[in-house]
Each structure stands twice: as C-alpha cells, then as structure tokens.
Length: 217
Image 1 (cartoon, rainbow, N blue to C red):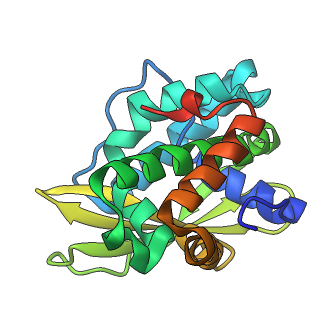
Image 2: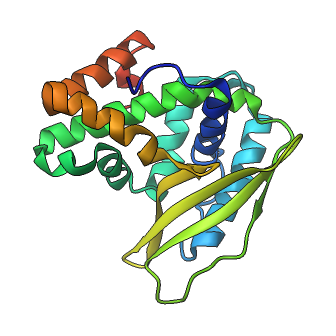
C-alpha cells in the first residue's frame, strides 16, 4: 500500500525535500517568485537556517511544520496540481468536494510521513545547478544538490509560471518524483474501492498517525 513503511534512506531524502518546502522562519521576508531559480535559492537558504535555529522543528513538531507550510510555503506551491498529478487520471473523475478532501489528506500524509526527517538537517548546504530554460518557458526544472557529509543528494523542483509568478508543483529526490512515488498505489486503491476509498484510506492512515486535521488549511 501507499502508506506502508518506505526504506529509511528514501524516507529521509524525501523528508529533506519536504524540509526545503516547509521550514521557513515566520519573520522571513516574502520569497521572490519572479524567477524560478531565485525562488528556490531563497527558499533553500532560509530553510536550512530555520531548521538549524529551531529546536521544535528539529524535534519533528508536526503542528509547527504545518503552521510554517500554510503561512510561508503554500503561496509558492501549486498543491492542487501536485495532488492531481499523484492521483493521476482519476483526478478529473473526482467532484470538487472529493478533490478538496484528497488535497487535505495528501498534505497530511506528506507532513506526518516526512516530518521526522527534519531532524537530519544538520550541516547541509544547497547548491543550484545552471538553469536550462529560455525566457519564454512557462515550465522549468530547477536542479539543486544538497551537500553535507557523504555524497551530494540530487534535489530538483518542477515549477510552473502562472500570472507572472513561479510555483512549485513537484519535487525530485535521486531521480524519484514525489507524484510518481504515489501514483501507482493511489490508482490501485481507487481501482479497488473508488475515489472515496482512497480518501478513507488516507484519512485512516492520518488518524492513526495523530489526526488528519492538523495538516488541513
């Protein structure tokens, strides 16, 4: 199942990618979303410093992580598109209420699954690779490396430009895109029990982990 335990290494790496989207300090100035690589650079730098400075985040405080995500990060993420990509072809079959519930429960799953990995952020730094894009592109991939002890970790972001603003809609760690990681298992659940079955499975998993409402906006 999609909510079964993953290999600890993959969980840690995906958690690190989530950290790069979540742990911004409350007092930080608004990230510049006018250029995709500028946005990722600023989010990454603020994230690393925030994690190092905040004992609650280092301890995996889910409530605080969710607060930071909602107040600072979600304006820079197209989470509807991220959820739709994970759900795949079934997304269009879901009614608006089902789509809303899927986004809520998927967000809760991500927060709780990977929050513990924030404790692994110690002396890491983030290096951006050259951006391969033209000025007219509306979708780009910003490639980065997380560097610390051991081998560098590939950490890439897919971004889209809408109304002149760049937003993140997928994350890649070591060649695995977040949406791809869940798509097949989500499809299997929907095939067996329908869209409501997937929502229930997600909600049940989140409830066992401490309650899904914590990650709802």
